[in-house]
Length: 130
Image 1 (tube, rainbow, N blue to C red):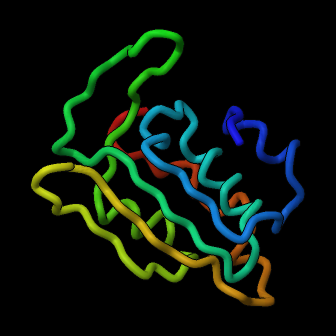
Image 2 (image 1 turned 180 degrees about the horizontal axis):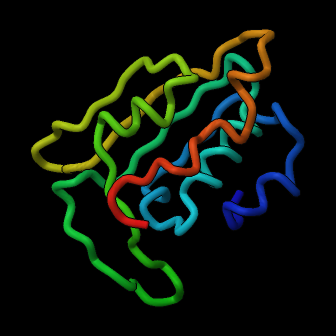
Image 3 (image 1 turned 90 degrees about the horizontal axis):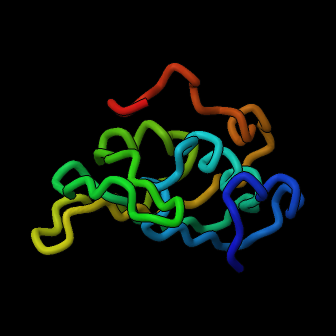
């Protein structure tokens, strides 16, 4: 499926997907917090998330044309904070060939809905470029 990140709430019910792949997209989302919240919203409890994004060692390439701008770079520590409400199974940022972030995480199977609320990201949190 291909669609805009801000469409996830309107296209899919909460807890709709067993697995979400978000590959090399996050750094292009102007509102990356909203995109993360929407991913958390549509993923079922116990669902798997595989996410890759650009790390600090990746060069910014600015406006790529056709609206594909390059806005952010993330660190391993930032990914740990952003997904503190998930079980992080693997978080890699030290590949010498592809200098980015690889996250493999599971949404917890819990009853406490406060921990999986789609609006859990602190709006004041900003990885250096907002």
